[in-house]
Image 1 (cartoon, one colour):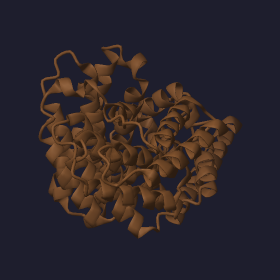
Image 2: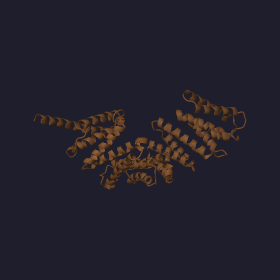
Image 3: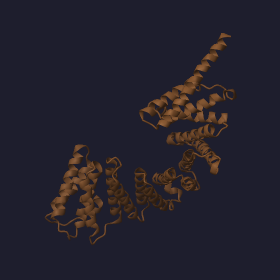
Image 4: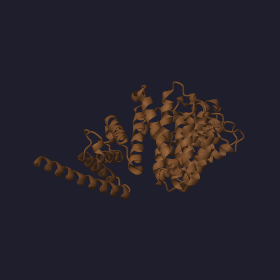
Length: 433
């Protein structure tokens, strides 16, 4: 804000002292923390209000004064959720729009983004029940996107905000509008050099997620394919030595395929789902190989964990749902889950992920069913599976998860406990002979 206001420095007038006080308050607000920050912002708002009140409406520097007030009002609303300040900020923006001098596009973009942020905050504070705030939020982000013409960075910023808010709202019509908007930006992301910054990946991830979310609602395979194609397109770029870009596209492609196949609920031989699942497995394996051959394992460990997680999920799904199962793939699944446990122990201990726990238990259960084909492994016993199922149940029940998930794990747990008893009886009989 400061740079724009300095270009429109008002001349000496009765209101000038209030304007200067507002600018000083804004500088203090941005340079302090804690309670002083809030006090500085309140003084800034009051000073700008006085300046606006005393300044002639047709004054040549009216724009700079109104912009100062709008920035301050929106800053307060975005920290406190102050509806009255948001309403006044929008009123002042309308006054600016009716002025003889149009707002610079970068300033209009920034202000519209902040209006959208304020409405999104109010929407979330309402428990996501504020329909009007959601509509106003999305409209503001769309307007920010229009004002971003000529600046890819601003278009990406507005597109990301629009995608996130549309997913939070969860309404199909908004998701469809966001898909149209983000698809236009996707069309200009054809240069790998653009992906040296995280924003293009964020936007494409949102676009894929928007398609996937619409697929969840409609079960229209067109959206599943579109979610996949987002990352297929990225994978076709000439990445050169930029290994992070290659790995990111592979991991994201594998993830969206695996999720979509599971969601479909159809037999994998239907509509080529089996070939899609195989592709998820291959992409995960390739990503793991590329990570292992580079320094990404230490620089970006989350890539390796995500690749192992997707590989484990895909192999477990294929071997537990489609059958007959492949003992080697079950071991590969367990290897990946053990890799996650070794490098992210919190997922199994401190802050356990119930799905990871139950998946490892499921993989152990499958392996034990074909134990004659595989040598014994440490940590892969009936007792280990029972302990993992119990741990997963504790987390699911504490989180009030879907009752069908909990019931299913109780069934698996009972089966494993029965197997433990049978194993002990078998061993006891053997020792007795």
